[in-house]
Length: 385
Image 1: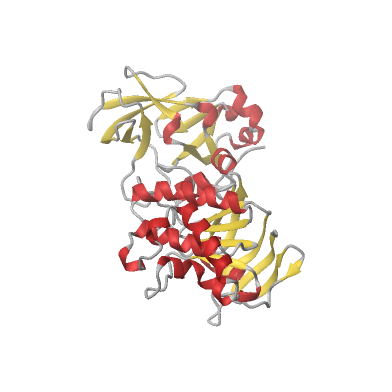
Image 2 (image 1 turned 30 degrees about the horizontal axis):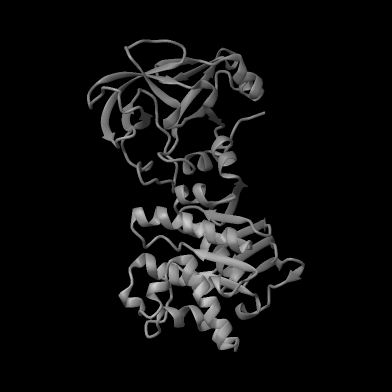
């Protein structure tokens, strides 16, 4: 077992494209680290550099104390699971799982034992004599996992291994992958573009954009204290509502269009820098789950009046799309499955209780959890201290 240490890693291609910028990141033994970000952010390139499938332009990559920059992939003691499974179609499940062990010239009895153990863990025992074409997508992914599992690697790498599965199976496989990784107890780097997957699986999550590491922390810390507007919008589903606002009354009032929120003293105590923004523009972030419905149209210091444009009934909750007379901020490269933040619609979204009687066209008063507001300066950086 080993830690993975990346110190100022850069990747520059022959055409001059700078894919990864000064990345410094440590993955501890047994830690499940998720790299997440929009397409083209450099996360797969980072994974391939760890695996030895891409050269490192500059910087140091270490497994434990060992510098591995110039080691071939086969010398790095890694196991990798790919998005497309990469199974041998002419081999059975058992043969696919055993392939790397045969290359090591391991005794047949020991190979059989390891294959059977892996198959039992992954629920593949009855499929060991089948060919990959006879399996479902989920079963093929389990075979790919089994092939990595039997190697007992010091480093485990996964490149969007669940993206080809249907939604229900993907949720189930998330649990299985996490359980297997905990059983292995090795440093694991998992790449995904799905922030929900990242939040539910990672011990820590590293958010990348344009080849740069923006923030690495626990899922809850990323959600509660994003370092900038991009992380705040990217983490959370549906995405955070971001509005252009103006601070007034020495940081005690917040103007959103024609409406005003009265901020309690606790916010200024927690974020004293807000008082310096009086009379200035900033961005306020409101998460959909931090909004609730008031029974009657009313005005108070913690409510916003809105018009409903769309209601999505999900059984356990309502996703209520709405408009207010404030400018919704668009964040480049941020999309979620439920809401496209790049759409032309000036719509926010609230996650409401399913008992709320509301429909498109209704006027509604939304109560805001003021202590849960997020504030960002004109450059997009979060305002805290």
